[in-house]
Image (cartoon, rainbow, N blue to C red; front, side):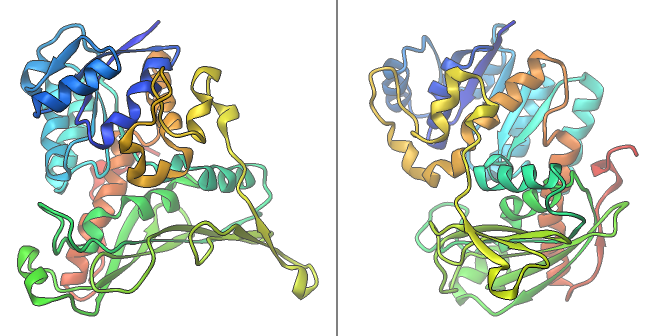
Length: 374
């Protein structure tokens, strides 16, 4: 069985074209972008016949089984809702949506239609996360006691909706991994804002905070996690970090990008407790046809590296894992991670955390629709 996929949005989205083309259970049948010239250039490069400048027209195409949405953040919720209403399965880049109401509608539609939704969160398929997940599943971490993650970035000069964006409104890269490791759910959050960004940035969203720090209480668990984010007026190299503290072993992210992970092992002589570890690659989890994409970047058949690979620097080799998780879920009629409810839980943590920060750290519960039945 093969699934017919259409990619919507071809900036970052172009990264995924050759991965779908080489996946043994996928047919990339169409691509969509509003700019007709760029659309045709990409379609010609990758030999794709169906080309849409209109998203609504694409959704009317009966040949398309599923859409992979890579459009700007404000469009994610409404485009996912439209696709589900049109009978298409949906993969969507992060975040799921920008409001709790849009998240709820996506969950409702998947329940009503039986269609599949997956938020394409890169961090939970990056090699560093997969390494920590392997340690966890093998029992090497012991009892997990605490989780921590950050996403810090200087967004000065970014266009459109980015200036002044509240840090937690785009928090899935740090919320995703803390929940994903144990397949946990957030039950409630408390968030503090700290510092103040420039006046001209504040006016965009009426959000003053330079940094937002959130505590997440897990549902049906003794665990909690801390995540923090900054986007403007904070001196920091780009960092998406994830750390886990267990009773036997803990893993910490390096302070400088490109350095090894640090694994701490309990009960050793003090100087021997920490050890620097280069994270292994996890291409072995993938069909052989797409294994190369974990380390090489994105190439077409002629060997030309696609320019969009520079965006996100490969995201820890996650892109082929994301494609495989989505396609595999459709072919085998199983739930991907994160599915609609899990994606809503991850996304709503950020939305509600900012609300908590505005209210001085008030505890805010995650809505019931984001919980799996347990």
